[in-house]
Structure formats: C-alpha cells, structure tokens
Amino acid sequence: MRIPKSPLASALLATAFFTCVWNDAHAQYTTASSSADIAAVANVVAMRQDSLVGTHGFLDRRAAFEKLMARFPLPDGVTVREIDADGVPGKWISPHGASGSPVARERGVILYLHGGGFYSGSSDSHRVLAATLAKDAGADVLLIDYRRMPEAVYPAQIDDAFASYAWLLKQGYAPSRIALAGESAGGNLMLELALRLRAAHLPLPSSMVAMSPIMDLSASGNSTLENAKRDPLLTRDGLIDVTRVYMHGGDPRSPDASPLFADLHGLPPLLLQVGSREILLDDSLRTARVAAMDDVAVSVEVWPGMVHQWQLFPGLIPEARRALSDTAGFIQAHISQLGDANTASATAVSSMHN
Image (cartoon, rainbow, N blue to C red):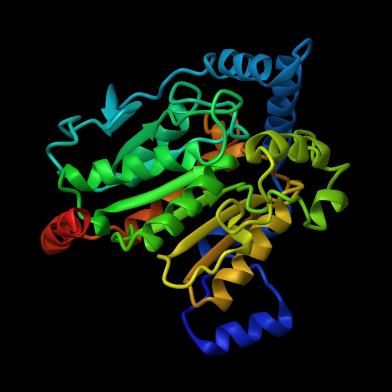
C-alpha cells in the first residue's frame, strides 16, 4: 500500500487503521498461496526446524543456521569479494558487468543488514538473498558482518551499520544512490540506522526496505499471540529472551531500539514486507501506520501463507523470488541516476566533514 504524504492519508489511517492493497501485478496473490508455494514453505520450515535439533543457546543456533544456509549455492551472474568498511567486514556483491569495486560508483548501492535475531546470520548465510537482490535491482550490495550478541550487545550493531553507511559516503556515493534494506533483526537495525543518520544531520538514503522486521522489542503486538499457532519459526517468549540479552537492562520500548515507538518524520520512502503467518505481522502493520501519520511515504505488502524470512529462499519458494523482485523494483524507483547524484555526493561529503 503506497500512502502519499498528505494530511488526508494520515487522517484516513487514524480512523480506518490500515488496509492492504496490492498493485495489479500482484493481484493474483490476494486470494491464497499456490500449492507450489505451500509445499515449498513447508519444506523450508521442516529444514529450519531440523537444523535446530540438539542445539542449545545462541551460539549453537548461530552455527546451525550457517550450516543450513551453506547448502544453497550462489546464483550465477554476480561477483563477490571481501571488503572492509572502516573496520566493519563484509562482502561487496556486484552483478556481472559491474567493476566489482566500490571505487567505481557506476551504479547504486544497497547497504544490506542481515537478520538473525541480533545473534545469528552473516554475509555468508545471506549471500544468496543479497546476490539475487543485486541482480534484480542492477545495483551493488554491501552486505556487512556487524557485531552480534552475545559477544556484543545493543547498540554495537547499530554502531557498525552507521560506520558502514558513513564509509559509503566517503567512497563518493551520493545518498540519493544508496538504499537501505534488511530482514528480521536487520529490518530493525536498518530503520534505527536511518533515525541515527537523521539525528546526526547526515544525508539520508534514497529508500528503505524492511522484510519481516522486528520493530517492537517489547513484543506487544496482538499478532504475537494471535499468530502463535500459525508461526512455525518464532515465539513471543523467544523474542523476549533475545531482547533481554540484546538490551542488557535497557528499555525495549525505547525509540532508539524499537522503531515502532520512534518519530519517523523526514525519513525516506519505506517498503515493508511481512508474511500473514508471522507473529511479527503487527510489527509491520503498526509501523506502517506510524510512518503514514508521520508523513513518510510507506508501502506494505502482506504475503498470504508466508512465514518469517521466506525471502531467504528464492531458489525454493516462488513467492520469495517475487518478493525480492518487488524489493528491487522499489529500490530502482527511488535510486537516482548517476548524473543526478553528483551534486548530492558533494553535499554528503561536506556534511560528514562538518
């Protein structure tokens, strides 16, 4: 649902709360998932559940997730190289035809923040998603390895995201040619990064995408209970356990940690994607309302029958492939052309030095 920046849109949302509208290209998704999608989702859920058998604690689950995701090959048509973004390691993923170097600045770039509950996930586990997004968007992807808990807790993850964005500006990228994206915990970090950039008076990126995001660390949404029997991957108690460690005594309702409770005025256009079976469904729906009330251009896609982080499996779930195509289209629509970005790039560098 695209909500224009207008008082009318805010007023309508204040009274009607929220309506999900699909564009014509996705009208066929409004009824039910196909049998192929249902079978594929069930297969992915079984694989994820089997991978956790016998695991105990964050580090065990982290290792199990890495082992699972290592089974999926990188798609053809991309170049991947290791990179260091001012002390934050990661991978630079380019579609074939690009130089593979951030120095070239030949195309837009997506700063991608992986999910994994703040303790799991990496540039290895998310390389397939990032490579697919790079090809679809015709953009480079900076996929960073931010510090994870329990070794590092809030706000170290946001600090690393901020450093990576600042590094892109130092490379000469105009903010209008940078997009932010992330899923699950990465969706949280992505929006918190944008809020920190705004607070620091740094230039904001062209757009933001949050897939299956954790927007409320207090887990207060009704869907955390209403979807408890429909979500095979997440539980409310599990979210609260993660929050307890991540926040190490901090307030989970702080707007500096939970974007749902933040003032979003002035942020760039936002796309939210969420599956109908997720306990995090309300995180996206409520954030969309907050964004609209704060005059942020916001779109939300609720994907019938989909589960948490289904976008990680574009080679297995047809709807994952379509979701990433939607994400790429959204980013393409907002990243400026190179010629339009030259002035913005100089402004960005000047703002950093100031």
